[in-house]
Image (cartoon, rainbow, N blue to C red; front, side):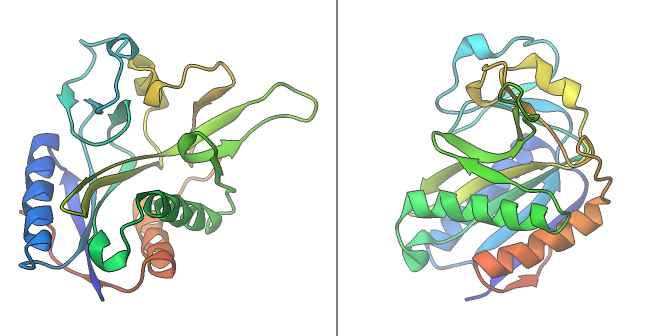
Length: 223
């Protein structure tokens, strides 16, 4: 089973991306299309997940806010963040949603390891975290990648957002993923001192995806 691997140049509008994902997921479920991973960047925006609490939208006028059917709460997308939309057929891969989310985390953790960054999962906190607690200090962990997926007819869509070099101040308009603990924040590769070109991140994402999910082949991005 080979999965398509597509990368869009420039910034992709969020409504257009969702429409393309929904169309592709339906085609996969009907056997009319192959699986696809689609890498994009978005203009600055907030998305409201299915479990979002309205109080977590701290500055509703700051950027456009889009409702979405993915799991999770409020999140930010913007330039410098690599969003990977993952349209996979879980009927063929095993109908285990928990394992699927763990595999997405493994994928990100493997990608970060390429750049000597130790990403970790945390029980009860979906996503990938970096422990920045200083010796003898209070807990300090930052999220570097968020995960929010939806399944329809056992085909996934939405996916993963990895902070490469976004403007981290833009997360200030929301409570990211509903996490308000003062010891928990948001980070990026750049914030950790890793100034990695997006192309190199994409190469690492591809290699780690193949280790976790299987081979891919480069295809054209959705129009």
